Amino acid sequence: MVRGVAFRGLLRRQWFRRLYGTRLAAQCADGVFQASLASAVFFNPDHQTDPKQAAAGFVVLLLPYSLVGPFAGVFLDRWRRQRVLVFANIARSTLVVATAVLLLTVGARGFGFDLAALAAVSVNRFYLAALSASLPHVVTRGQLVLANAVTTTSGTVIAAVGGGLGLAIRRWAGSGDGGSAVVAISSCVLYATSALIAAVMPVDLLGPEPRSTQPLSTAVRRVAAGLVEGARHVAARPRSRRALLAICASRLLFGMSTIGSLLLYRNYFTDHGVLRAGLVGLGQVFAAAAIGYVVAAIVTPAAAIRFGTARWITAMFGLAAITQLAFGLWFQMAPLLVGAFFLGASASGAKICVDTTVQEDIDDHYRGRVFSLYDTGFNLTFVVAAVIAAFSLPPNGKSYPVLFAISAGYALIAGWYGASAARASATD
Image (cartoon, rainbow, N blue to C red; front, top):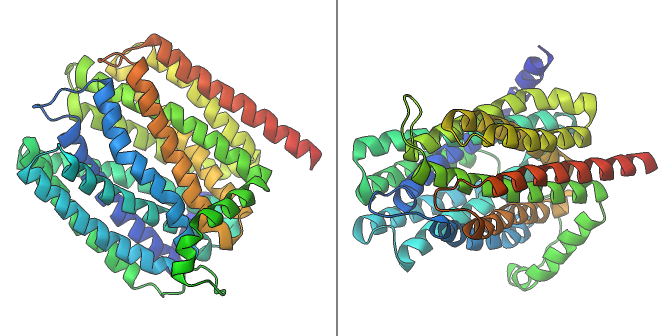
């Protein structure tokens, strides 16, 4: 009842509704576009996928995308964030069209396709970092935990819905690169919708706060110095530093689990009743994880108030350690779906609290850079996970040693973070 009243309080804030709407439309589009890439790159019946090929696909798409992050932050602390939300969606629509044209002409192979796809994905760095940095401008400090729970989780769920929509479109459009191209083009409608919603917001609403800045040309030359300043700002705030280190380390384990699941559904599992192998089965995994995100979003705001964000983050990593082992040992689709639910819940619960910690601790002048660094670490650890998975997973994705390593990793993160936070609390 209390959470329902609080949520209605959020929705009564006009500009929160606008920011929320532009996120939902864009992240639904992300899901549709990612479904087109997954079907073209990993689940095309004309191509085989082994751990090294899967890892190479993630590295090509995510490494340059991740390195854009720091540059995004420097500009987000100077550019009007409302403008970023509008023009990022326009740019993504243009790049998605280019990707679709290449799918139709040369297929999902070659430098041109990789360049267009990673450029479309890389623009998302500006967009998501701008959303996170903008949120404190449309809600009160006391609403941040709930606002993060609602927006982050809703974004993840709507992206999963978008993925399902993409799969439905692909069934209608047909398999192969032509069907994937139709799915990609469909996402442009949603990107355009997101841009229109953001366009009605006041230009100065989302910050950054007015201050004297250097000319843009000088700012470009000072990118490296600006990043160092942002890193030092985080380093001087132990609470944020601990939270960022923990969430990025957990992302490494999440990435290994994701690639393992991809290989299992691509090369190991077969259809069994309503449980499906292939791309549809992987969609079922993402749906289970999305349900976990929703549950965590409902529970986390109240739990964070009652137990504190540090204890809740520790509990979420501990939950992941237990459930990944308990439900992963079977290497069967039904238990794996349960494990995906708990992994989604633990990842969401931890990230909501980490996002809130950073938003509360970091000055607005640095917030764009810090969130971009956050996103960079979040994604670079996934790239590292892809490389590790390439050399540790068999082609079918079934590996008991890797499963035990993932579970032990979550347990170590929970133990380190919980002990560090407790010591810091005792000395305050």
